[in-house]
View (cartoon, rainbow, N blue to C red):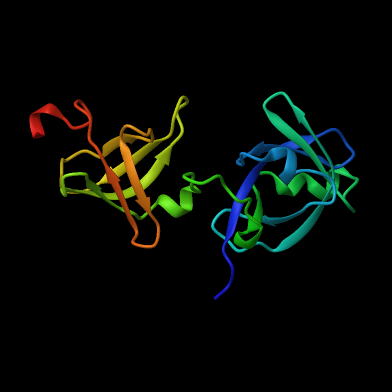
Length: 178
């Protein structure tokens, strides 16, 4: 089975005429991912990567990173990359501190309350600001349950078993369905 690849950036445009692209970072480690001589793979969303690229230079600029690649010093060679993703293979993901997880590790977990009720499957992770929010879909209520990713709520994540245990604080479920 082929190794999975994960997006670390989205090319949203070009900058200047010397082959720089504007990259919207999708990583917590942009300084390391986009540093010179690092290798990234180019792909269209939903497809396998088709081209390996080596970073020549990178720098933050407003809300994006300006990244240039070795062998691509001309705007004409990179214009067609708009909308494409920059990816890394799973084997090159950065190690995370204990108790933190990549989104792809969390999506699909079965979520139960600390008193044994099945809440549902974790289907998405939202990042609205102060903390992440886990979107859980299941039989506990008609609408998705939105669970804040905070220590008072998330009691345990067990990737081996594919489960998450949560303590549902008052107000997390719709009042008319409790």
